[in-house]
Amino acid sequence: MALGSVHENGGKMYRAIAANKRTTILLIVGYVFLVVGLGTWASLALNSPWPAIIIIGIAAAWVSVSLAKGVKLAQYLADWTPVSRADERDLYVTVENLAIRNGMPMPIVCISDEPDINAFAVGMSPKKAIVGITTGALATLDGTELEAVMSHEMSHIKNYDTRVKMVIIALIGSMSFLAMLCWAFVIAALSGEQNERRKGDDNSAALMVAVAVVAVIPAIIFSILAWVLGPLFSAAISRQREYLADATGVEMTRYPDGMISMLRKIQAQEKGIAAHGMAIGALYLHNESRGLKDLFSATHPPTQKRIDRVQELSRSI
Picture 1 (cartoon, rainbow, N blue to C red):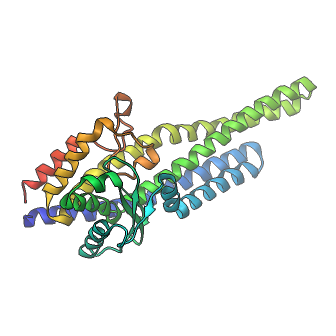
Picture 2 (cartoon, one colour):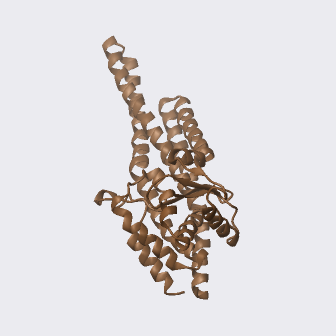
Picture 3 (cartoon, rainbow, N blue to C red):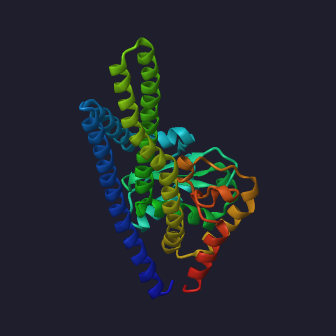
């Protein structure tokens, strides 16, 4: 690889690592301000500490558990099976060599029993990470392609892409639950208002209306963030990280033809593979999107565009 190309791609990688760390901090800080602000507003509006306690408490618990147990949860949901050197020697040695050459801790290596060519990575840091591949990929890819796909996944770990994805998944999950909880309060309060009016208790009915009005504001805000803006933001970040992981993977292996060949095999199977859900799909090498409805919510860029970018990079080698 040309010296200038190495320096340029290395600079991109280190800038990406710094950007991902900043993004993680900004996301968490912004989320804290949002939750505390809405909780405080609701408590002041109802003259009670309980709205703030409920909103802040649930948000803190959900995010804390999600980040602490996120790797194991992803492994469980996707049914990834850890393997050793004795189980899958070629795969294990490939990952081990990439880790040694790039000064990275050895991640847990897993396989997923799926017929499609795919791979995955998850982890809050390089010291606590999982990388793996599908049985379909193991049966289909040659040695250079196997190294290419695992270098891509190791790049996600090295660049802290997986940390950003896990934080976003945790925050979106928390906001989704809070949105449903607030809507439940709205429905319960309106139902209570009708019951109180039938009893002739206008004061209690007015209180129920006030609760519904106060609860509907955070319900709307959390709904928009969890079900519209959050997924779009997550998908946009994921698409850009895929391009960078391809480039960083080429830098790791110094062999772009392996990455191109692997992506072409991914492209050849696209018509037949099933798309994973957004949360799990963002952790994979490839997640097919279909139709105009997925134009902005796709977690991965079109495979041909990825091939084009790697080919452009290969010209400088």
